[in-house]
Length: 584
Image (cartoon, rainbow, N blue to C red; front, side, top):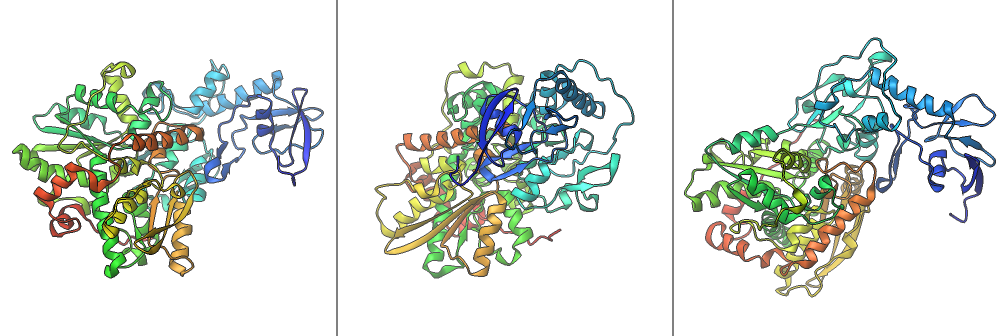
């Protein structure tokens, strides 16, 4: 308890609990292990935001001596307050509130994407709802499936405002807002525009916090099965953050490295070859570090910004059009892999690019949008990456095959583009990309390998991190931000001249890709995200090679095919451009 905060004692179910003044009934109850169910409430600890609209009233409690019930999520305790969470009236009121939600909710739970992962469904089971006593007019709205990443089903929206808090307060994108009045109210977009026509970045953080199936990802699983049933060569790549989260879908602890079982699963699905996006992350570092060195030596505008995150790229295109020459022009790792698969790999397999289908398994729903960007199409009008699925979608495919995931034998990636370093692995965590770039930039600027490759100042869950790194007699100021709200704060300081940096890493999702919109839902449990981060760094520590320029397969790629990093051929294949977009 903070020494400056006045303690107050209240009573919950006749049990005394002393908490700091300003504590809600909900948080006070947690201190004595009393569970109060919630639906609209969401405490985003790591982002320092809390959604407590108190609109669902599922958390109602009874105050002794008063007839009016209180919302535990928003009512603050005071000295002597006495409430009960266990009366018959409370139990029946909660059940009634859940029934009211269900009375205006589609009854398609068995075919809903959130089946088994829906907070409303779980609450109904917890409250013992076996009958819906209320009937009446139902809200009916068309679905919005205009984007490649997200689907909005207004009929499943319960107006909890979680997505609004995430979109407006945490990410500062401002796409989602209340539209309409009374029974016709929905959480929508300005002027009822389809999502694809808004400034939505498709980060997926809205669907990550949605308690129902009102916001879901575009499901590409059938596209993958169709490709596997075709006569084409279908290859797959997996991002670093996937391997430390996939196991959660099968009962394993967050952060467990399931690389071997994941590769085996993909082989049994019928993929021709299974590769590691970490290899392409090493290539990305070769390009970004070379571009960083070029700019540091006077060849361009500073700071250089990482460009691996498609949500962040779309965010800067909408909001900081005067800074589009600042991000690195290097493609993201999975797009670099796709470009190499349809050139370098195709040549070695003796195949045409049209004969190869590239599937990416990503922790991110924005990667679905990214794969459709026209700027990322290689020659002959072909996209670098053909299909993107998320960690959750891969889990569903594993279940489709009936595989006993936890007990599968381990397999290794195919080697032509499957060997990677620790630097490629840490891309999955906030601060990892810039740390990986510094490891290689240091070597190129000094000719010496780092004795200590870990930059602890750039690690952790903090939204903005800064470090001063001495390289070749120069002090480089480095920053990284995770969460688009933090990115906005950082860039506004740079734009105004208040802050000067040599390089900045930005990831749209708080904590980085480990907390991406396509990862297993954490339901507000930040410890799972932290464990994924620890899992990423554990893999890095176990690697014999921890710097991208040390990867022998990457060296071979440049020697035999690409030439110099940031050279003419590399720029043609592995770099892209950005588009100024209208701010809504």
